[in-house]
Amino acid sequence: MSSATPSPERLPTPRALARLLTFARPVLPRLGLGALSALGAALAALMIPIVLEWVVAGPIASRETSAVVFGAALVLGLGLTEAALVYLRRWLVVGPATTVEYSIRRAFYDRLQRLPVEFHDRWQGGQLLSRMMQDLGLIRRWTAFGLIMLVVNLLTIVIGYVLLFQWHWMLGAVFVVSAIPMWIQGFLFERTYGSLSRQSQDQQGDLATSVEESVHGIRVLKAFGRGAHALRRFTRQAESLRETEMRKARSIGVIDFWLVLMPELSFAASLLIGIWLAADGQVGVPELVAFFAMAATLRWPLESIGFLFSFLLDARTATDRIFEVFDARNTITDPERPATVEAPRGALAFEDVHFRYQDAGEAEPDLLNGIDLALEPGETMALVGLTGSGKTTLTTLPTRLYDVTGGRVTLDGVDVRDLRLEELRRLIATAFEDATLFSATVRENVLLGRDDLDPSSPEAEAVLREALRVAQAGFVDDLPEGVETQIGEEGMSLSGGQRQRLALARAVAARPAVLVMDDPLSALDVETEERVQSELRTVLSTTTALIVAHRPSTVALADRVALLEGGRIAAVGTHSELMVRSAHYRAVISSFEREEQQERELMMSPNPTAELDLMAVQEALAEREAGAPEKGAQR
Image: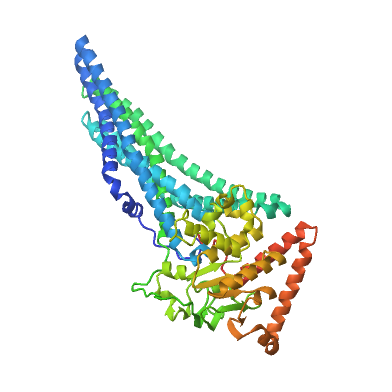
């Protein structure tokens, strides 16, 4: 996590992992039975040395063949019992562990949907993806195996050490003393490995972000020949991750060294002491056989502690990373006592609206600094201004993608913060300049905002066809399966103009009281734009619309025009009125005309790189205009 965000107080590992109980509580009984099965298997293994002591002291010493066979059968039975209980443990815990993973994953996705856009502006997509997939998978494995085996193996070691003392206190003391260096190393290991585990998982999130960005931007990378540059950047990140993983491996190697060395030294010391005790008559051969069999049984639990401890710390880090998202503050929520709009008319008003992004310095003025603007029901208002004037930001406020930092936005006289988000976003629909589509059918994308309709119903079909007609999206009938065609990730199988028309159709299909459009026709050619505008006039005649305009032709759709300058509304009037009385408005319109002419020339250019360069410039300008902080300011 960057210094830009204060780090929460680091909880002790048990308390940090205890936060998973919220999701694990329904399956605790089966997890408990799985732990008991694992403990039973360990106890069965610990019984074998005791049986061996009896066999050596009795049947073997007295040469009773039948008793030896019985002893061998008893050892075999204990082994089979251990194997059966291990199988039972796996059967009991696998289902609950996947249930816990499913519950956390579903809650995590729901949380991502509910968190405000401001949160997503600051977080890298790869970081969220790595938490959703990698960290949750690690938590599942730890729940099913690591947690149970760590507890059971620690209990096995304690019980085994107690049993070692029954043969001779000196032999047991050797193993207890040998454990002291291991616990010291375990303490040092936690301090070192914990920070390395967090660093590694964050770096994996960064690496996932790089892959995501490269895949999404593959066309630009190829067109500009920047594949090698992207590879070098990726290689640097991968190398940093490799170095961190090597440091983790060295840290695990140190703890494993002590966990293997000390038991071996204990064996050697116990052998010398045992021979001396046997020669002195204080310990018999059966006791020595049982002692070393018990020590051998404890070897795996001892050696596994290093792996299980590192697993524990990895799970703790994964839990911390998951709950960073759960703990993120959600400032845009439903009101405790929601109001409602009984008969929506579509009167939208901005009353002394101020807005600034959270990371804006105190010395900087508000991006929107006292906006007063009222749209009458059924009116179409065009919003114009130079790049960076805050037009796009203003369009995010009616649906509460961001909340105002001063003043209020009202719908039919009701503050939008007093409405339930579901109702608000049903009454106000938005068509963005960046047409985002989903990996689904055309039908599902266009009817995304109509969950009140059965997609297969005649009414839904009528709404779909009407929206496609208004958006001039008849091209969908030429797709392989028409409106049932899967359009692929982000709709990249379609052209920019086709994506934008489907996004516009989605907004139209929502049939909102207010339609907010951020330059929705920028990717269309002139002829298609004219047809869409003609159809939109019919739709807009009964809908209040706020349209961010970057073209003179878009301004022509509006009943009135609002000029945004320096975070304020500088003038409001018809296009003709503003052309007469506002020099700044004339300058803005002139800049629109120049940009439109440049785009026309580039469209006729045979050089695709020039066109891509224009796209890159437009994207950069759009980001600058939005004023959003760079993503990834925190992990």
